[in-house]
Amino acid sequence: MFRNLRITIFVFYFLSVSAFLATLHYLLAVVEVQNVFLLAVVMTCFSALGAVFMSKLSIDPLEEHVSNLQNLSKETLHELNLPISTIMTNLNMLKKKTTDEKDLKRLKRIDTACAMLQERYNELDYMIKKQTLHEIKEEFMLDELLLLRVDFLKHIYPNMEFNLNLEKTKIISDKTGLAKIIDNIIDNAVKYSPNSNRCDIRLNDHSLHIEDFGCGMDEVELIRIYDTYYQSNDTMRGFGIGLSMVKRFCDSQNIQLNIKSKLGFGTTVLLKFKEN
Image (cartoon, rainbow, N blue to C red; front, side):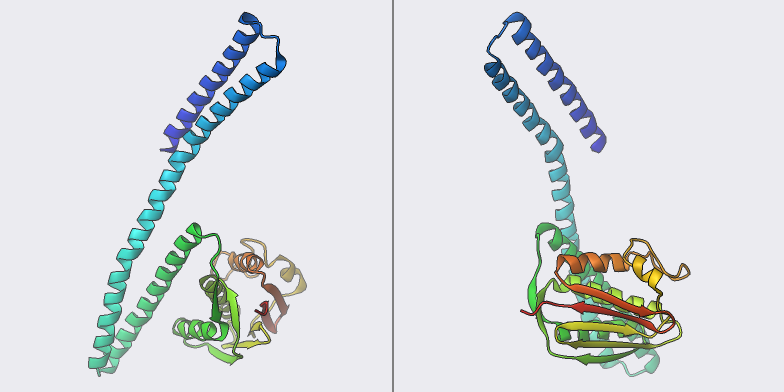
């Protein structure tokens, strides 16, 4: 598709420039137009007409391509919803009828996998909406969102102890995007706490504190943490894009982001939200 598009644009550009020069030569050498203003108007109209056709040649196929991709994504998303719902419904029925402990453990693992699949579904739905809408904001209770995220992450990190101290807090923000940011921060807290299983989460005065008691960072590392692909520990899993993504999201939502850390003692991430 794009190869043919490049060839079409090249051919049209070559022909339009040739026609422009030929017309200019005709007006000056053959017709011998003396009125400079009239000549400028004619050539400007000619250039504008060429620009309109070139923009249509460039943008229309891309718009059609993006529209087809969006429609395919929406249709795929819709088709995914049914099997996920079916699995979860039947899973709940099996859990009610099963008494064997081994079978219950297996069902719990399936339940966790379904929850993770549902999360990916929600993220895909969010990305599609993000492309079609310039801004996604809603009013919600931040403390309730934190409880949901921690409850989900407990299945992924069963050995982690989450200490919650949450004050009722209502905010207006991008709820799905913020949930991804919270997951990312907590994931970092777990990842960089190999010798600690504790994570404290405190919400008060429209400020969210997520504190770990892991390896921490020194001043040099703190300067570089927002750089894309930077990792303070090359042996850790991941690609180092987490905090860069967190920073971009906070900037877009007018959330103050501050990170305090001490080498060997842990790290605290602070998100300060605007009061409604």
